[in-house]
Image (tube, rainbow, N blue to C red; front, top):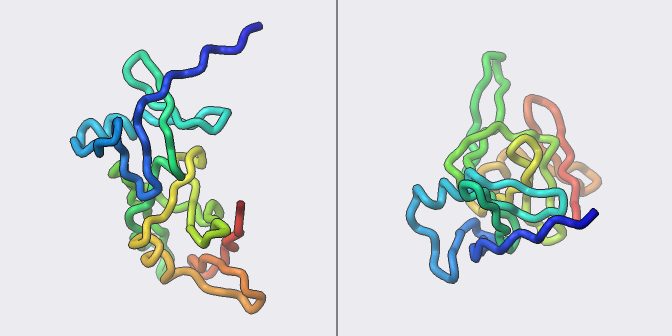
Length: 157
């Protein structure tokens, strides 16, 4: 059995701040950017793949292709309870899975999005927004406090 042919590069670079560029020029046309990012997947080898109609290509990613741009509190029907809603750079919003947060050794906050399939880096503004819900235990570990429950934020990497 032969291994599949490697996928060609897209010639698209994704910087750690979530900006996408093609051959050095930022992809500034919003519709094209959204079409690319909404056709994104991560394969078993950890590569980020973009589906372009009937073709696939591999992105060059500095950190993560998705970034968290904003964090908002959304109250639920139960008094005093709610959820944190993330706004991603693909203009979609999704509920934060509080158990899917982690901190890198460089103190960068990440979470898993898209059903736990893709990591997303918190941009500075989003980090400051979620920091309102983060506290530190006596032993120096950090946790997210949400609806009276502590979710530990582990350090990975």
